[in-house]
Every structure is written in C-alpha cells, then in structure tokens.
Length: 312
Image (cartoon, rainbow, N blue to C red; front, side, top):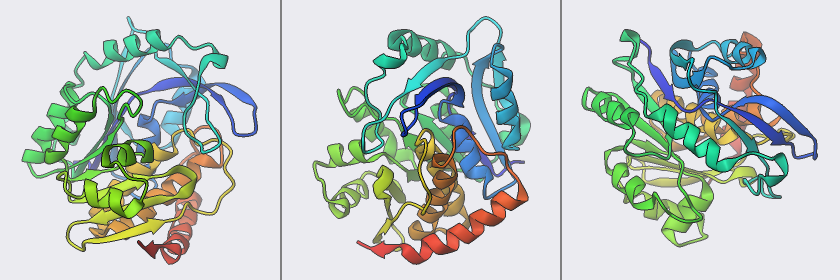
C-alpha cells in the first residue's frame, strides 16, 4: 500500500517567466507538481490524474523522472491533453493570459470532459495515510473517493482552487471543509473569504471552518500555518532561492505539507516541508528529477527554514 496519494490535473502550459521569456510545452496542471512535493520527502507516493495519449514525450519523461507510482494515471485516446497558459504579476499571482493566445473557454471545457471520467483506484491506492486533492470541483467523483478513504482512516488534504474573482465555488468549498483534515488555500482566496489582510486574523477565521491544520500560501511573502492541537500561528518565509518560474510552487507546497503533517503533526514543521518543496519548483522551469542529492539538499534546506520561522 502507498502512503500518500496525490490527485490533480495534467496540463501542458505555455509560461511567461519572471524574466520575460516565454516557454512552451511545459508539464503543468498542478498534479505533477503536487506529486513532486510529496515525493521529495517519501518514496511511497502515488499519482492520480488524466491526460490524452498525445502528451509530448518530454513531458512524459519529466513525469517519470519524479519517481512516483503512475498506476493511477489514466490516458484517453479520444481526448486531447489539456493545454493552458501561465502569466504572473509582480506578486507572482496569475494575471491575463491573452498574450499567450490560449482559448480559456476551450481549456475549461476540456478539463470538465476529463473530470467526468472516473479514475478507478488501483489496489495499492486504497488505504493511504493521506489523500491530497488539488481541485476546484467539489462534486467531482474524486472528492467522493477521498471522503470514502477518509471514512476508512486516511487523512483528507485539500488544496482548494477557489474562484476569488467571482466566488462562484466559495460556498461549496466552505461546506466541504467540514470534512477535510488539512487545507492549504492561496492568499487571495483565504484573505478574501476571511475579509481581512491580517495573517493572524485570516488563520483564526479558517481555523473555525473544520480542518485540524490550515496553511495559507502567500507567494513570495511565504506562508502562514496553524493547527488545532497546538493552537499556535506561524509565519514561514519562502526558502532562500532565486525565483525564475512560480508555476506549480503552491501545488508542490501542498504535496510537501501533507507529508510533513503526517510525519510531524505540527503546523510549523509541516509548512516548512511545504516551503522547501515549493523552493525546488520556483528556481527552474518544469520539474527537477528526483535524486538522492536533491533529497539531501531538501533536508538541509528544511533545517534552515525551520530556524527562520516566527510566531504570529
């Protein structure tokens, strides 16, 4: 049995990097990044996702290079792999994608086609310690699968993709949080729902929504974390690396966070696991290959990040 199961989309992205360059055909979507974030800390990680059979060979090799179990990756010959675009503002948040000429309506339609097709859980995915979902769709079948796994004793970790501009899925996400153990929203969503720009107040608001552990991701400002058993709030700075591409950093954070929480049951430590996972994403385009040297570097960076945390 695998200990950690990560579910998220596969999207092939065009990205405008922070230095202005544009790169295309980059493996993205959040799912591979979340799986990388977890795999950095554990060799018992499975990946649930969907794509077409038309994925670029380079993306396939990159996915295999993170060394997670891929028996939960389903490929459909009749659906094209989703393609998207990522452009960021000065705070490393997504902004207009028009310059990269991506049909956003087609992207959403393609995603909905994929999520309408269930992914059967392989036998080794049926009793994980943690199941971590990256999704905006609370009614999709994988959410129901996660809830069923939780009833069987697994922890349910959620990175909610909240529509913080129109708030179209706000109430559905809030309702789901009553059944979630770990949640890691981004700052615009978390602060918007809480109605505050103060990290302590935001964590206090989210602490009452149900999960036993909350971590709010705030891009280049780091993150904020709280857990019920200690009832303390922490600021975790971003790991000290030079950022090139923030794509997938938050997803990697969530993957690292859920493993860190399972290992420590301490919000401060778990958020540091997440911060280190994110650091390996922002300093390059795409996903690094999983190696013993990379994991050794992660351990050293974890020790440093822990020293830099502060109480809110």
